[in-house]
Length: 341
Ligand code: NAP
Ligand code: GDD
Image (cartoon, rainbow, N blue to C red; front, side):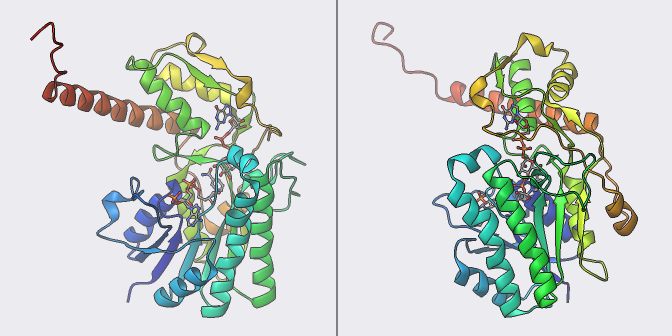
């Protein structure tokens, strides 16, 4: 029998890459999705015949217990969360419910149904916030700077606590920013690459951004989901930083993305003070030596390759959108005005 895995947040960026990865390893893949009035399967549409989707919600304990009891997975990957930092100031309580208490609900289901299930928690470099040292390791103290970061600190420690209290095989992956053509358009990398494509193809003029000096350690999501799986294949559970070890500013990102299409970013980018955050994480850079030494994990995509991959994918997608619009206009020409008829 192939091993079964349950992914929460399967409709998100990482969920889609992880589902593909686990399928390639022969897993029976189950995904938890929350009920919506319209389906939101854009990232996993190509996988729906190979995976099984189940409705449940991080807010609803009974739905999670029932789901885990029905599937009895070998591994659970808890990727679901309210993951956009600015929204966490607008919806701090909901962020706490999803991103913090949601983790306990998942762990309670593991404890009650089968404490032998292996559990992965999607922790975040956002927990380091106002960084105490550089680079950040598994031992660096946390100083979160957003309600999202605070909620992730809770999720991290409750995972450690269930490991220590109940001997559950629970791992926390402290992942630094990771991106891809599947990244949500509100995050800065995708906002930039989508805008670069639109500007290059003549359907947008300006790109408004916030803090250009913020620095992040950006990697490729496809590499990072491999690290999640590796953590659950070890003899004992532990926590790992996953990062490239190299940081760049938002300004570097913008320069590189515009240069890739032979444009000068200064002609198109404007800073909008409304996009600055109430408290900023100025800089993040991870030390993934433990993941390299214990898991054998190394990233395969550089920052420059990542930005090029995302710009190229957006150029392709925006060009298709423009072509579709032209075709639709040709099939449905505007009705003639009364003076023309
Ligand atoms: P994402 O694209 O925003 O996906 C989030 C997923 O969570 C979506 O599938 C979403 O479902 C689901 N979700 C949200 N609330 C839910 C609820 N109440 N019940 C069930 N599902 C719910 O995030 P991502 O970039 O893939 O990141 C995956 C995880 O890693 C998140 O926990 C994030 O905080 C964490 N993380 C991400 C990064 C990064 O750089 N990407 C770094 C460190 C940690 P809908 O489609 O229905 O909205
Ligand atoms: N989103 C956004 N939009 N960010 C901007 C903009 C803008 O217009 N202009 C500048 N930035 C800066 C932000 O202030 C921040 O310092 C940086 O770009 C990165 O922002 P995001 O891409 O929104 O990511 P994040 O670092 O806040 O959070 C992401 O990474 C975390 C891991 O460190 C998310 O994926 C989190 O879920 C994840 O935990």
